[in-house]
Length: 77
Image (cartoon, rainbow, N blue to C red):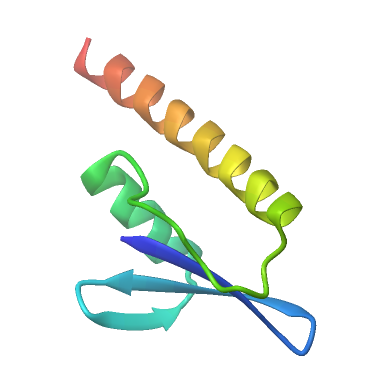
């Protein structure tokens, strides 16, 4: 799963790319993918996303990845 961020008329839009298909963002699909893969793949940003927004998004995704990884280890133990 790859998340794609872009702005349309000033509003942030998030898409999920699975393989070659791009779909509207869904928390359910995001959680399913995190359970299966334990992390986000690379994130794609449209040119409309500022560096500050990219930094904030990457920080959030990193925290989610760490949390998922920690919880996955707890289940194994």
